[in-house]
Length: 233
Ligand code: 13P
Image (tube, rainbow, N blue to C red; front, side, top):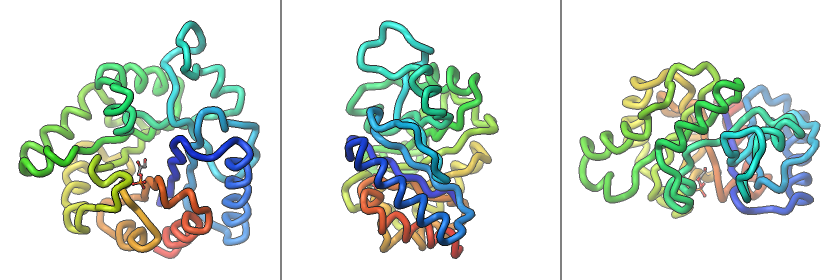
């Protein structure tokens, strides 16, 4: 199982380091063999020496250069970061990243052998428009993406489930995951209002290889409980 935390625009560097230290201690104390991944805010990347893998929430497809406000490869290399989140709905919808730009990022970091957690997911109106429309929308998010890339992890995150406390039913999650597994055999995470109260049953579903957790992961004890659930499954 892969248990991942997207910390989004939360925690200072100091808080992030404390958080990572707590996870590290938990993973060591419980001999956790699951893959634990954390995506801190960009300014919180640091020289960490932990059992927990740290990835970046974003980076520009360039080594360095004139890209105001962006991180380049040099900023990731400084801290040994080799994992990147691409296609998160907040970057697609709030920051306006297009599929073409995401493909550019994907290809740049794929060439470098990065582990890529690539997010897909439909907004509410597409889900409400029926399965065909919804799957067409998700299909378009696979356009240009090398679904056979060996270091690819896909995260299915319905936009309407992110930060809302709403989730699809377990059978809906299972159905979408089954369809997405036919598009790529890469590990497939579910994300969107995963909490300690539902994480175990979500991770137990067929074709769910882990979870990508936002708000609930901000509580280290909650996130550690989810890691423990993954270990138990
Ligand atoms: P929430 O867990 O807060 O719904 O966020 C999910 C998410 O966007 C993870 O990337």
